[in-house]
Length: 107
Image 1 (tube, rainbow, N blue to C red):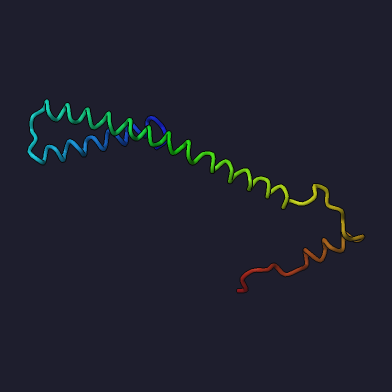
Image 2 (image 1 turned 90 degrees about the horizontal axis):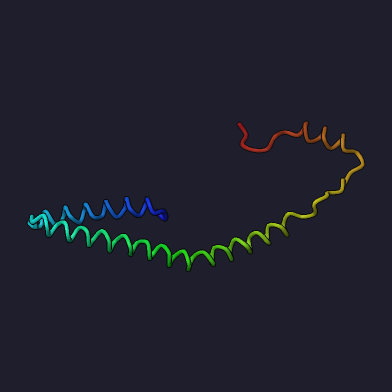
């Protein structure tokens, strides 16, 4: 809904509902319905766009700050780029891993 197209679709739907309610309240004059529908559409559309922009200004810095702190933490938790082997017998370790029973649910 943050796109212009989404805002137009939402506002058009809200205007149709508004005009339907006006019609059911026995306002049958087409000029009154056209003017009130246009006013409702314009007001709703521009208020929706204004609220989206204000929320983007308020929320975006917080999201960037949170994302940045997570990114820094992830880099620290990754550990060293090069891992030194801890054994002199890598073939032995590989065979033990392959022979080990898989963990998980037992059948």
